[in-house]
Amino acid sequence: MTQSATTVERKLDGWIESGEFRDWCGRCRRPRVTCFCALIEPFESLPRFVILSQPRETKHRLGTGRMAHLGLSNSLWYEGIDFTRHPLVNRVIADAGNAPMLLYPGTDAINISRLNVVSRRDLIAGPRTPVVFVLDGTWKSVRKMLRLSANLRSLPRICFQPPTPSAYGFRREPRPECYSTIEAIHQVIELFDDSISNGVAERRHDGLLKAFHFMVATQLAYSPV
Image 1 (tube, helix red, strand yellow):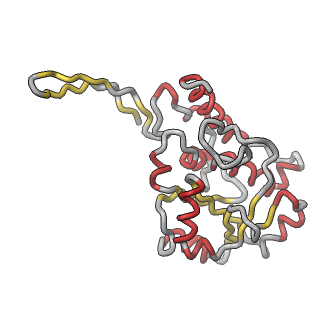
Image 2 (image 1 turned 135 degrees about the horizontal axis):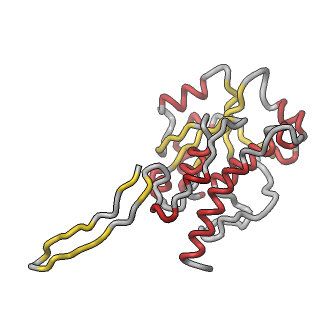
Image 3 (image 1 turned 90 degrees about the vertical axis):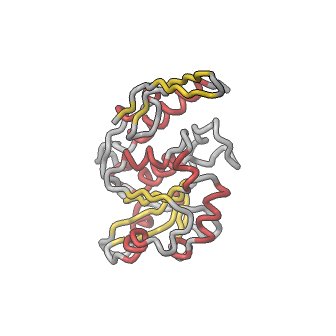
């Protein structure tokens, strides 16, 4: 779905003001010249992800929450701040077939980078599907989301040790190793899906980073650092 370049004329105090809108993609919400949709190859991930985006983040042209959702065919993506009474979020949490957990660092979070495959599997009781909730926004905004969302605060938390610095260099982060949403999701898949680490499964999740790196390279081309 695209919007063609359109010339707009507006009369102001006897003057005609003209402007032209660029072609844009309705799927990734990026200008056509920076559209990354051709690089997206959707797949079903393990674990499954529920991406909760802060409203301002959904409008950010360099946000990666929607990008991750487009690449994960079994993911859910909701916008909001307080999810305490969000019916769809609560339905996922209450589903007995799910093992919900929140990706969020802290002293009470289990660092899955330090666990072996068996220990990571033991985080899931029985044949349940691991479902990871991811807060998408600035660190300040996600702290507020967590403070207001009582249902998310009750979830067990996981975190990981970033193996490399983030490639998201042009957005301000508290520390170099702080990952963007899509980088964090990629790393959780890397750690949780033992078929990937054992070389049994295809590394389909690397496709998430193709779109991300394209966006980063495009942005740096327009505004080099």
